[in-house]
Structures are given as C-alpha cells and as structure tokens.
Length: 224
Image 1: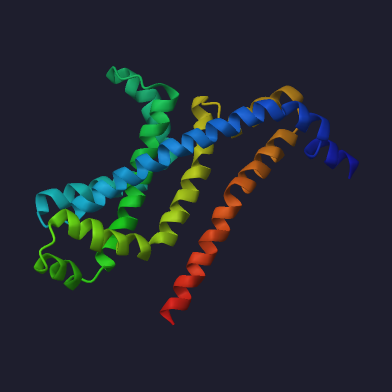
Image 2: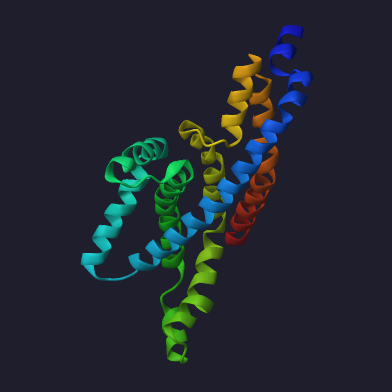
C-alpha cells in the first residue's frame, strides 16, 4: 500500500509539480474558451445552411459534416499540424488545434442544432412571418430559442467532450494540462502528476456533468 501511495499519491511531488500543472490547466482553459465558441459558430452556420432546400448546397454540406464526424480528431489534428506546412501554411500548434477542433466539433454541433431546428413545428415560423416579422426576427426570436432549448442537454454534453478533447493537443506539444503532467512525470519518474491532472479535469467538469443530469431529468419529467 505504501508503494502504491508513493507511486501515485506522493504529496511532495504533487506540491513540486503544482506550478507546471497550473500553467497547463490555464492553457487547457484558454484552449477550451477558444475551441468551444469556434465549434458552436461553425455548427450554427452549417445548421442554418442545412435548412436550405437547394440540393447543390445541402449535399456538399452533408458530405462535409459526415467526413469530419467520421475522421478521428487525433488523426485530423496530426494531418493538419504535419501536412499544412507542406502546403505553405504553417499554423503552429495553437492554429492547428483550433482548426482541427473547429472542423470536428463544428460538425457535431451542426447535427445537434439541425435536429433542434427541425424539432420546432413548422407552423410557428410561418405564423411569425404572417404576423409581419422579418426572417432574422423569426430565426432570432422564434426558431433558435426553441431549438437550443430542445437540444440543450446534447449541446452541454458535446461541450464536455470538447473540453476533454483538449487533452489530445499534447501530441503537438501544446503545453496544456496533460502535456505538462507528462513532462512532470518524465522528470520525477512518478505517476502522481497524472493523477493530479485527472483530479483537475474532474473538478473542472463535474459541475457541468451534474448540470447535464438535471437538465436531462427535467426534460424526461416534462415529457410525461
């Protein structure tokens, strides 16, 4: 038991590694604050365009969404980070991660928002237009508020996945939490920094998990 505690729960190593782990946590938060809005914005634009009836527009959009939902985000990130410089576009670690996450998460957000838009009864936008509301007013005041409310648990769940997904940025040496924990582990030859990183992820995401559970239970209760 003492050997386990020394290998995974060493307080002295945890204290020594705290500064580097804190810097990694800050990078993780900054990365999440960058990639989540980018993904939502991309998903919103794709979802709006997917409501168009023109086949020449819908089919390419469907193909785009399917492709970036099917490609593993880690593979996509490596391809962009290693491949774009050969095309004369070197985005660096931050740029490659932001672009990869925007493409991947944007595709998922697009499907979620599209489902929310389609869940709004067609008669409501038509009634709003009949009352004299402009197109942007119909979308802003009638369609989108209901669409987001109908798929809010899915949006939060996907956002949780995006935050957890930031850990793969370590493969391109972006100094987020997991990367810094692995660096500390390689110096100390001890797994305690990884355990501390896991605890930090838990404390960061657990409130959102509880909120998600409450929203899901509320939706189930409202349908009864």
